[in-house]
Length: 333
Ligand SMILES: NC(=O)c1ccc[n+]([C@@H]2O[C@H](COP(=O)([O-])OP(=O)(O)OC[C@H]3O[C@@H](n4cnc5c(N)ncnc54)[C@H](OP(=O)(O)O)[C@@H]3O)[C@@H](O)[C@H]2O)c1
Image 1: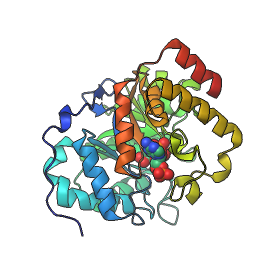
Image 2 (image 1 turned 135 degrees about the vertical axis):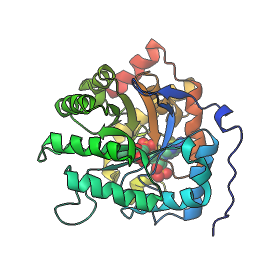
Image 3 (image 1 turned 60 degrees about the vertical axis):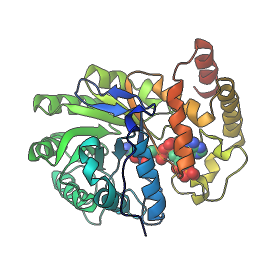
Image 4 (image 1 turned 45 degrees about the vertical axis):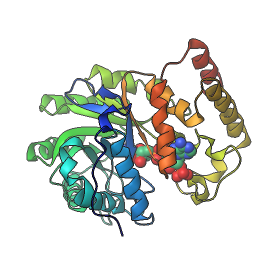
């Protein structure tokens, strides 16, 4: 049972959250956003999901990131969010920036995956029903599909925005060349790309190496970083082994065998650098992504309010000395 009455903290925008402008747009996003990929599906207690989402909102996190297949099970994170919208957050809808996506597998058969117009449009209709929403703030093509003409995927995004079912369009996990096409197509059709959502963290530098961050900025798009904690590796979660209930223990998206003695050695060294900065490893990892002013926001996942609160403190210090950057690069590049 969940209590029916929620009244948001009146000081939610004065609790320290900072907001950054998203590319060349009118949108500001909180430096920390909350993602519902895992921990918010129908295998997690609804009361815990609700507590985390409402706590986040009370702390100034007004951006919630979803996708059609987040859960587990597929669709259930959106259904959880939809219940919270209905019971608690409806009066605050205009304060919320809600995303969803389609591009990975969702339902069986040829129309429940990848980048066709048919998949994107029908998936968004399903997402809106599950979330009890009339529109989302941003709809993403979740990944580049080399088998569908990119014009078709982009035109679906344009038409979705024109239909009013999404206010903005975005791309996620696009390689450089496909992203270049997407930016121009969307711009030429007066639906400029708002965000490129990319995996970016201390251990995963591809967006830097492939020039995706500079490319987004050059095209007036923001960048939003997912898995900024490398799914929990860049925290103290695994420094003393694999704890019960952790993502690595579930051994699905984060494999136990990826936690090698070599990686643990690096994490210990990063933890010492963080301690010298007066931060937890999680706080330093988030601050490291946010040190780059071209990154609009980091999307964190969390399995408890304590983790979320730990992460929120990263905002206090996002400046790194040259020496710290060199030390971190020496360990991870
Ligand atoms: N566009 C895409 O293709 C894509 C792909 C992946 C993710 N995303 C988005 O990005 C969001 C975040 O991804 P993610 O969940 O991988 O992010 P993450 O923040 O790198 O990892 C989250 C996990 O780290 C652990 N954690 C978080 N804060 C902690 C803390 N302070 N101390 C110790 N452990 C902590 C928790 O693990 P435990 O659960 O073990 O406690 C939590 O579930 C997703 O929810 C989704 O919205 C997008």
